[in-house]
Image 1: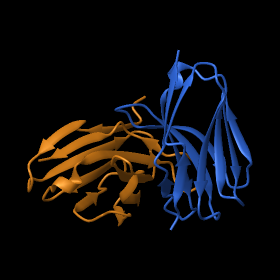
Image 2 (image 1 turned 120 degrees about the vertical axis):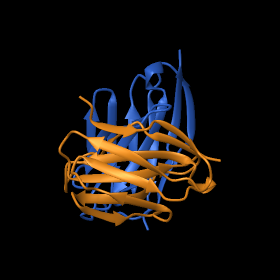
Image 3 (image 1 turned 180 degrees about the vertical axis):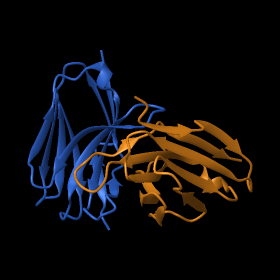
Image 4 (image 1 turned 45 degrees about the horizontal axis):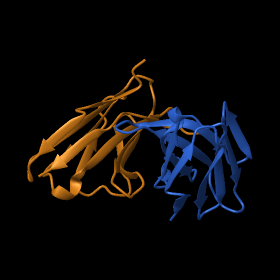
Length: 113
Length: 113
């Protein structure tokens, strides 16, 4: 009964370092999303994917890259971390087009020093 | 661009009260509206999804209404309990193939015994 699993849960990076956040879902969902949540702001979409092998930019894509090589996994990469990327990152998945809710992971809390 | 506003930002009430949380959106051309619950340090849990053709949805003590023409939704919580303490987020789906959600900043609810 895992749903959407994000790893790691916490991470501290130094400016300029790189890292990859992993999102895995076991519900055979087609659509997957990466959001960031900052204090006093709503969730903002970084990148999304509507199927294996496809990705696209969301509202705030700069400084991030993504890959969806397998249907169940959606990776978010930071090539050169900046303090402005300190945030809580959420992955979500959705069955497909239509009136279905998005299912969220528990988030990754990332601090960039 | 779709703007989603939630009022109030925070609410503190004694146990047993009936509550109304408000959500407004600027573009009435929506596909559906979703209410989520977020507990501290956790991801989002979908509570209710109202399709654009519906007026309301109910789940247990929760009732959500939708008035597309006025750009408003309300979440009604009956007989509030301390376990209802959380942040409640409203999100609007504009209906593109992406299924992208536009989030409000949330209402932080505290129910004290």
